[in-house]
Amino acid sequence: MGKAAPQPDLFADGAQPPPLPEGVAWYRGRLSKAEQIGLLDDAVAILQAAPLFRPRMRNGTPLINKMTNCGALGWYSDEKGYRYIAQHPETGAPWPPIPSRLSALCDAIMDELGIAGYAPDACLVNAYGAEGRLNLHQDHDEVDFRWPIVSVSLGADALFVLGGYSRKDKVLPIRLCSGDVVVLYGKGRTLFHGVKKVFPGTSPVSHPALNGLARINFTLRRAR
Image (cartoon, rainbow, N blue to C red; front, side):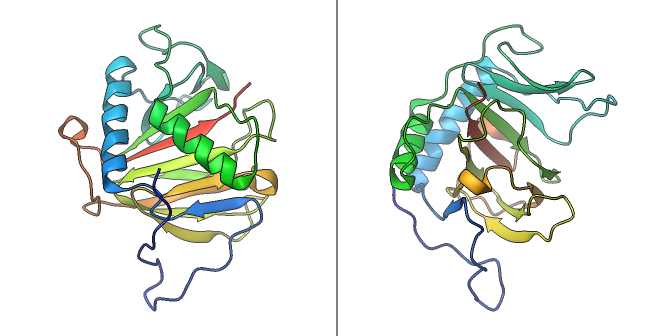
């Protein structure tokens, strides 16, 4: 996979963003345009095998974004709560495998971070429309928090917000672009984070089968 390259800063005055908290790695422009297009092809194949659906919260309210999964396990939510399941909730079919391109990207980044033995068994595929967002949350449905969360952005820019260990902590805004990768590991593994907004029309890549979707996000984790 390609090395990180400079990307436009979030701040209008060109100032560099504040230092990231311990346990957060931001690989800006990690993926080349060709690599991004390859991952969009993978996303289309995943959606064909495991169609998008909209999970529900405990109170029955649908979540904002549609999603699907790949890997041995897939994240799911309904009136019974948040959990990982082995089959698509609507088709009953097993989730498709994690694409080899994503696995290779994870392996390369883990080598750079000095993390051995990371073998993700779940990958969320979040599909953002023009009005998509993701409320501030912690990822805590996994068994062992020693394993990182790896997030890969494709499509339109998004305003990612990174908080602390409490929902009330101040958040750091980061403008993520297509081809960026963010890793939460070690002390950063349980930080609150979310997506405040998407910037339609900013994507450098597209795919006809994904018409109507502004942004695709792959989020890999070790669930069990």
